[in-house]
Length: 71
Image (spheres, rainbow, N blue to C red):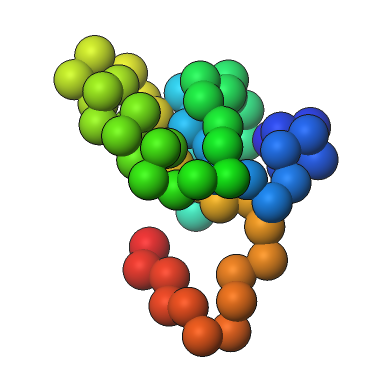
């Protein structure tokens, strides 16, 4: 996951994950899509959701203080 964070810093990514830690954070996975456009990524996520793959959307940048993130 560190390699993914470094390579796609500041972008949204769709990750097919293969390992989660005890806090359900992604440890290992494969990037299926990436973009700075969140709408593009959520469209891709919806496409992939029907394929029965374990996928997640992550933002790999600094979240602005005026943004609320719900996990």
